[in-house]
Image 1 (cartoon, rainbow, N blue to C red):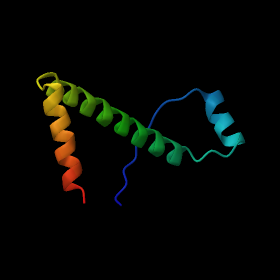
Image 2: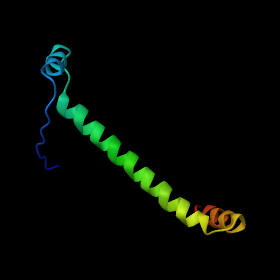
Image 3: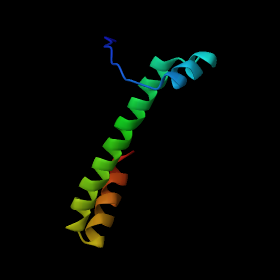
Image 4: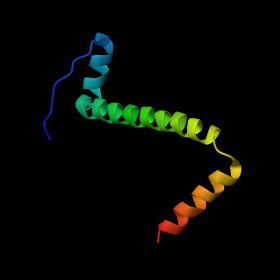
Length: 73
């Protein structure tokens, strides 16, 4: 995987505390960014789904779910 470098300013005291407990900052930042991307994507999907279901009746939603279950053999 190709990597890139990012930088951020943090308080000196926080940097010292990170060093004291031997935190792998790169790993923590990468995990936090991946979590944020997942959170944003879920939020976007929820908004899109809400828009789709707002124009569908309960019967249409039930039929779509049933149809989807039938195709998942």
